[in-house]
Length: 373
Image (tube, rainbow, N blue to C red; front, top):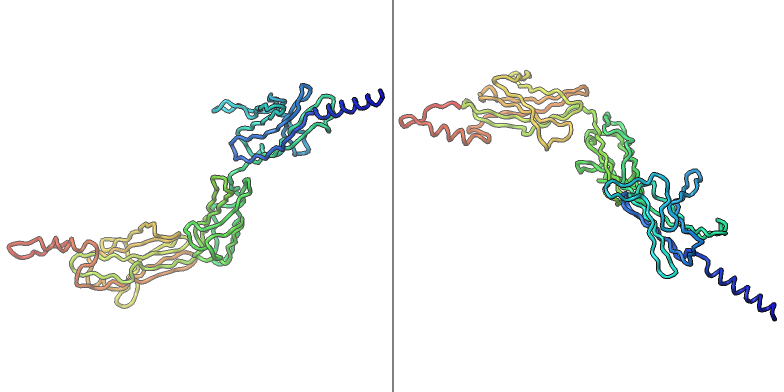
């Protein structure tokens, strides 16, 4: 009877000791935060005695490295470069503990989150007299979200010939991995159709002059701000010319001027000249002089590689009524368009009403004097 009683006592004692052994009772919830924010990981322990120590460690996966010890119980023991933030004066790592009956929660605080802080963090209860493989352990995962950043792997300017091809590749880094789209800056359709192309690569084939312009790569992963990169595609092409108005009218012999306007497109930038058609059909080049004023204008309405030229014919006379040729030239060829100047009975243009009113007001002894404007 004595022997049986002893066996029962030893068994009850073993169960009691086992029941009092420290353990991690809850799963460590994963933490997802953005760069420069603060991450929190909670490890809740029960039955922690004076002979056990709760440790937080950073699991190193590079080259099979050992875990980096960060804390023991409620003390930070990390010996690396923690760095005190100049603005807040707070450390990189901290440990905070909360007691709730037999439970103690050890919260690891990780400040100024950077990309390298992401990964697994190990909570361990080190028990005196027990081998490491038998220590209670649980893993908490920290994810650090990084805003997209496009890698400078492509040029910002490309020059191509008509009919050639071009592949644009936009590589981006971020967490989660960014979605990449291509679009045109001017809002026009892409050469292959559609207003957006998803994916890192944009293929331009059989390039034409209308394909010239700015293409924008946008990387976005819902972590602000998104990143973008602009690529300018320049296309070599033969000049083309178009008139702002194909016919221009003006009255003669009253010192009225006529403005002829032409838009020239081409790359490289074309040289431009105005030609006048004579009575026998020959073309003579017009010089910028007392009779003619040649200017180059600028407008936000112009597309890339377009240039606006103006020929002002001063003091229109009968001999000025003819065809004028706007001619653009570069090494890829020539382009031209024709503008006709014809006679009208009344002054044409924005300033005509002022000129007429000025003339009518000048009277001498009851009749209008001849007044040259």
